[in-house]
Length: 166
Image (cartoon, rainbow, N blue to C red; front, side):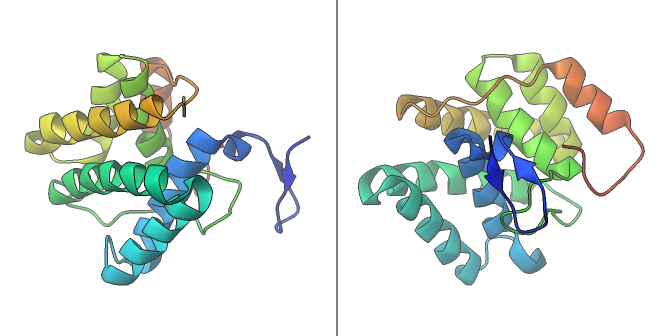
């Protein structure tokens, strides 16, 4: 069985450490619409170190920060995220997770499909490269994400907007 969440549902997917690191890190980084503010930076760093210990947590946090800085540098729209510990994923969170999962699976089509949904065209290559760097660091520490095929990314991206997808 999964972890019982306060909203009354069970969630197994975000009980997986690799997925939780990506999504809960992203949620803390984008809290309150303040992408990468000092408070969010500290909250996110603390989360990684609480989850992984200081050495591995710091290493993964720095790769995570480089990746999200690259995404933010080429993003024209505000970042969207669900509240911390929410069992659902919004569309941006699906794309964020798919970007890193595809990078770990060496699925270039999937990486670029997800990245194109998050950043302006001129930012696709640098954001994808940063995602690949973070994905490699995650894998190097033994944190493997479940693959998200490019067809799933396109399907989610093409659906009408709604608040949660998973």
